[in-house]
Length: 80
Image (cartoon, rainbow, N blue to C red):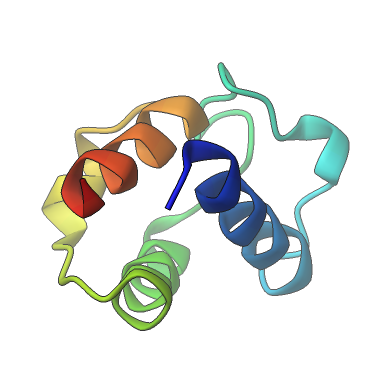
C-alpha cells in the first residue's frame, strides 16, 4: 500500500468519524493541537489501524507521533 493510499484511508476516517475539517489535515498538522484528537479519540484511531491496516497499535505508539505526516509514515513503515 502506498503512502497516498494510507493517507486517503486516514483522511476519510478523520473527516467521517471524527468530524475533522479536511482543510486542517496537512502533513505538518499536529494531531492533538491542530486536529483536536483527544485521548478518547486515540482509542478510535487505534481501532481504525487494526481494522483497516491489519496490525495492532498501542495508544502509547500514537503519542510518539506528533503530526499527521508522522502517523501516516508510521503506518507505511509497519506495512512495509
